[in-house]
Image 1 (cartoon, rainbow, N blue to C red):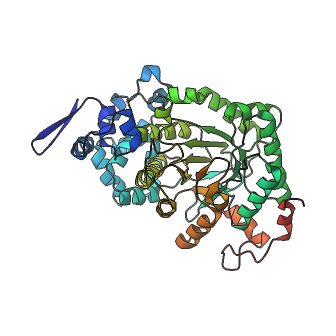
Image 2 (cartoon, rainbow, N blue to C red):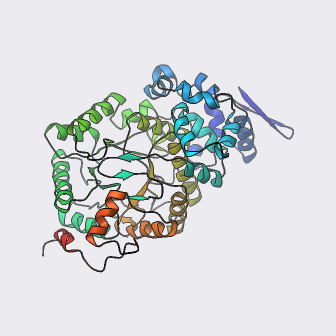
Image 3 (cartoon, helix red, strand yellow):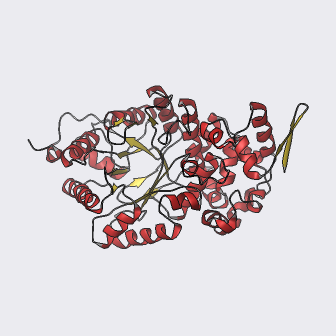
Length: 459
C-alpha cells in the first residue's frame, strides 16, 4: 500500500502498478482499462507518492509477476547492479533531479542505462514536464551501425517508407526515388508489405536489394514481415539485412504477436550469420506502441506507458539498429488526441534513450483521431530538438496502404535545416556524390541525377 496526503485528503494506492497508473498523465487507454487516476487531485497525489519512492523498490516488487512473465524475468535477471549503484540511494524524484543536473552527462547516462529498469524510467517520466523530457533525452546518445551509422550527434536519419497498396514494384520504385531525392533512406528503406506471404516478401526483398546494390546506397533494407516469415527466407538464402518484429512489454502481448524471446534470439543469430553489414552488426528492427498490450488483453492492470518502457527493455536485449515507437497508430482508444499523442511520443523517446535503446518515432495519427498536421509538426520539432535517432519519410505524409498520416520527406528536410542536423555520414557522402546535396550541404538537387534515372517506372 502506498499513500499520499493532499490537503485534508489521504489517497491510497494498492500496489506499485496502481501507483504508476494513477501517476500517469491522462490518456484514453488507461481510462479504457479502468486504471487511470479518477481525478487530477488523485494524479497529483500519486505523483507525490511516486517521487518519494526509493529506486530499489522497483527491484523488489514486479508490476507483472516474475513467475508467469518472461519479460519480467528478463528485466530482473539482466539487471546490472554495478551500473545501478551510483543512483541506488535515490528516490524517483531524486533520479529526476540527477538527470537534469550537470552531473548527468552523455557518458554518465550511457553507463547508467543497464542499471535502470523500464519501470524506473517510466516512473521518472511521469514526474517530468515536457521540457524535462526534451532536456534529458537530448543528453542520451545511442549509436548503432549496419551499412551506415545511426544516432551520431548532430544527425537525424529517416526511414524511407515506400508502401504501396498492391506492392507494385513501379510504385515502390517511384516512392524510393522521391525519398532519395529528398535525402531520406539512411535509417532504412523499409516496406510494409500488403500481404505477409513468403513469396511476396521474397520478391520485395530482392527488389530492394537490387536497387541498393545497383545504386551502391550505403543503407539497409527491410521488409516488415513477421519474424517467422523472415527467418524462413533467411534459411532459403534471401537477401535479408534487418529482421523486423513488433514487440510489447509482457509475455502475453508478445505471444499475441506470435513471438517469444527465444524466437527473437534465433532470428537475430540467423541474421548475424549472413554477415551483410559493412560498418556494424546491429541487425534487428523493432516497432512498439502504447496500447498494444491493452488491445491484446495482456496488460495485467499496468498502464500503457510503463508497458511501452518494458517493450524497450525487450528491444535492448537484442542490440537493434532501430527501435520505432509508432505513436498514435493504434488509434484514439489509446491516445485520444494531439495532446496525448505528443506527450506519449516524448515519453517513449525519453524512456527508450534512457534505457540505452536507439529510439526513433513514427510521428503519426489515424484518420479518426482528434489530431491534425499541426500536432504532427509540433511533435516532430520537439523530437528533433530532443535528438531522436530517426523519423519516418512517407510520400506526402499520407500512407495510402496503411491508411494513416505520418511525416513526409519534406518534413525531415525542414527539420535538418532548422536544427542543423545531417544524414548518417556514409549516406551523406553518397548523397553528395549523386549531386543531391548542394555545395552548402543542403538537399537541393538541380535535376534528376543520372544514376537515379534507373528508378523511373518504365513507360
